[in-house]
Image 1: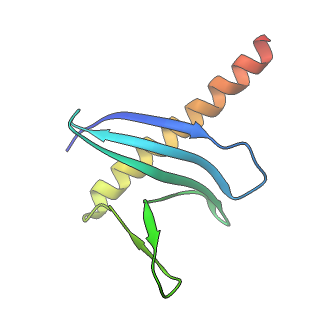
Image 2 (image 1 turned 180 degrees about the vertical axis):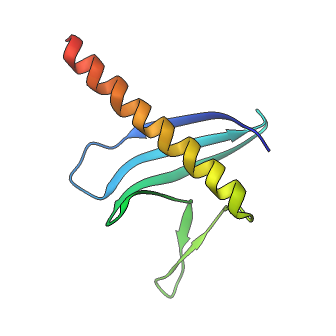
Length: 94
């Protein structure tokens, strides 16, 4: 399955949440609310989830295979870094 679009909304805050992402597959299927989070070992991608009555969380959508997860994570982290670079360039030009 080919990733055809990745859109990142950078979150400017002191929280661990760094961005919210929408990813499109094959120009036909979209997944919203994927989060980019700053963890102890760097950035990681958290799939959209909902809070359960017991207080835990359950993924709403997630890849089944490790290679698809890697493809999604790599695409999202790359797009996130490109967004940061574009924002930095725009602020320098102002």
